[in-house]
Image 1 (cartoon, one colour):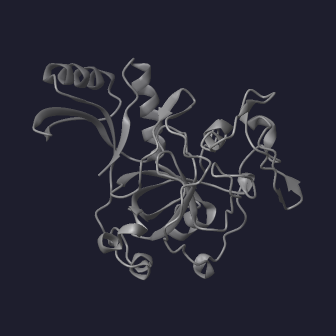
Image 2 (spheres, helix red, strand yellow):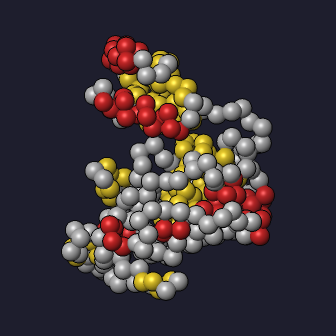
Length: 303
């Protein structure tokens, strides 16, 4: 299951996009804006409280397996940007992110996680209630709200999700799916999976197809080659620097090291990657080991 510390940890992330509001520090060191205390299932979500005491439960959990075949996928439609959750740039856990101006053309592969009962009914970064039984997701940089097709690269199953939350802020995760979406594409109960996230722009359906076609088509056909996880430690224009980093990684014997020459915008780049890695757990472990060597934190690549 996903690491969600920080998905809503800095409430300024959710609130600072509200025109005319003046967020103020709360006692917990967070930032609170307009009141957004909704009742759900007998509890009240007070977003002015610090993250450590905001939720009823300390640990996340999920209910027994559900039948998602009866849950309708969201139909992408043009929506105004949320007043909340679109501040750009924003900083969480010391890292700064920039929200994309629009979702058109976004297509990326990486590791998906999911979140469940701990957050059910509480406010997302867009100040909508999180519903773990709806097909939704959290993403660090796509505008709120936006739509994307998420495809499990290991089994070809896909789902359209409405992105209405920020996160996940675990370095090696690309998207946090709702519990229902995770069940739909087979990320549950494993907890993580390799996915493609392809944004859907309802304003340009000539590019993406009609709403009905979007619901029916899959981004990656079932039976595709099994994807591999790599950790990209750097892409260097100075080829000697690339070779030095590769030599250091090989000496540490963490995993195989791959050095490839690629052309980017007319420039020759030497890319240094570690992999392929067996699974997400190994990727997380090797990531920490690379940092312990004093090298930059690598980026996950899924090919």
